[in-house]
Structure formats: structure tokens, C-alpha cells
Image (cartoon, rainbow, N blue to C red; front, side, top):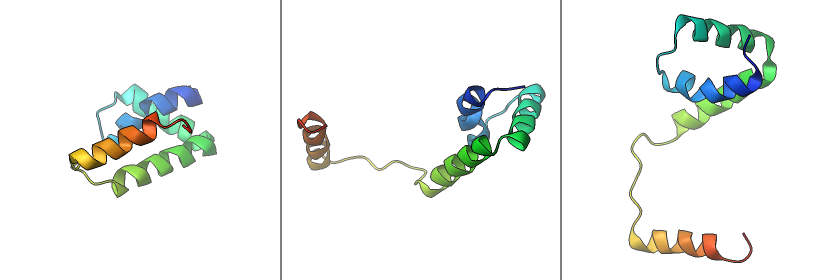
Length: 76
């Protein structure tokens, strides 16, 4: 059976609908049946993925400068 760490590593593929082998799908389902923490993680990841826009919007120069300034500021 999969460990929680392994479920987290495969969660992106599961949520994105990427193909998993029948053995991987079975192992994921068995683990998710027994582990409410991983079920919650998968639900939250799925909610995040569905709420994001599918096409990323490019940043303009001003937005890029603001982000870099925040990264470089001493409070981070």
C-alpha cells in the first residue's frame, strides 16, 4: 500500500487526469479509502486546480518589477 508521501507525489497526475497504471490507481484508491488526510489533500488540490485560470496571463514589466522588489526586500 502507498504511504501518504507517495500519494502526495502522485496527486498532481491524479488531479490533472494523467494516465496512471491500473496498479497505481488501485493503490491510490485503497489509500484514499483509509486516509482522510490524503482525501482532504486531494480535494483541496482539485479545488485549487479548478479555480485557477487554465491559461496563465503574462506579467507586464511593472508587475514583474513589483514581484522582484518584494522578493528582494529584507522582510522575506
